[in-house]
Amino acid sequence: MNNFFTITNLADILGVSFRTVNSWIDTGKLRAETDTKGRVGFTYFQLMGIPEIDEMVNSDWDKELQIKPLRQYNSIELFAGGGGLALGMEKAGFHHIMLNEFDHSACETLRTNRPKWNIVEGDIHNIDFTPYKGQVDFISGGFPCQAFSYAGEKKGFEDARGTLFFELARAVKETQPKVFLGENVRGLFTHENGKTLQVIKDVIADLGYTLIEPRVLKAIMYQVPQKRERLILIAIRNDIADKVTFNWPAPYNRILNLRDAFYKGILYNSDVPDSIGQNYPQRKKEIMDMVPMGGNWTNLPLEIQKEYLKGSFGLEGGKTGIARRLSLDEPSLTLTCSPAMKQTERCHPLETRPLNIREYARIQTFPDEWQFMGKMDAQYKQIGNAVPVNLAYAIGRSLIRLFNDIELLNK
Image (cartoon, rainbow, N blue to C red; front, side, top):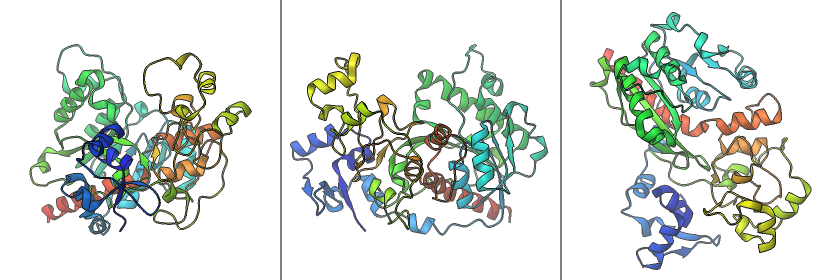
């Protein structure tokens, strides 16, 4: 087991800046060393006592991989997209009896890969969920983060009307599953100064469910080679909630990087296959050629910086995503819906081009056999918006454990 943590790894695990970790080194709080690969960082023995690191090293990850459902647990997946959350939940043991998605290309992706899944394409507002009452154990969905209109009246369920969270809540109200999961961006915590999350909490209570304290999960902790964070909301029906305990998934024992994603190893049994992908215009390629692995616009000559950044050259802010070339020895930055957006550049570590479709998919831990349908831009969008499969799988295992506990209660 490789328990070497780079400076960036430690910063990401603890949720602090690279500069902060360097200040700990400068003041003697931590002592950095160089490993056999030339990376600067820390061994586990130097970091013992830090709870997040101890939890990784002493993880129950392998034990949790053995969790299997005691019976078939039926689920409904809303806002299914390209299938990241649905695939992870299926891998954990859930049996999808219906999936809904509005986007046609994403629906084609789901149908192509899982012909037996019941894919309902179209607007969620038009779906009647009542026929599924008594048939569904679990509902999940990554609803978009939207502002609510606040009249100052606490109407509970009705406060969410007009949002897509309301449609998730309506599906729950009409089917009464034992548990449901909502997934969103980290920013939901502070959206509208916390009002949005408070309305969501009020709605969940009004539905007759107990919300587990929401948690932001870092994908890098769950065998995903990407710095992606997702807010996870899990609610248990009130008649069950006080009889069971939900335990969040254990972290994997190390941080995976792009080398793990692109080459044969822990994640995949072969190197990344060739695929379609975007290309840079000639001048942009000439400029990106000058950026070293792991570097960005700050590594360019001054005149080239001014040419590339144009009006934003003198503005405040780190702008670290501009002209960014990823590093094989670190996880990817969070993927967006396009690998060549100027503020969030995702250039291949070794070749001067944007990441291609299969590289994108591997960073999100989709299996190579999972094919994406639609035009190239639609494929990037499906992958960029997805929940990483391995993150969903880890959460799914914890949910299956919860359902097994509920099942044992009934017996």
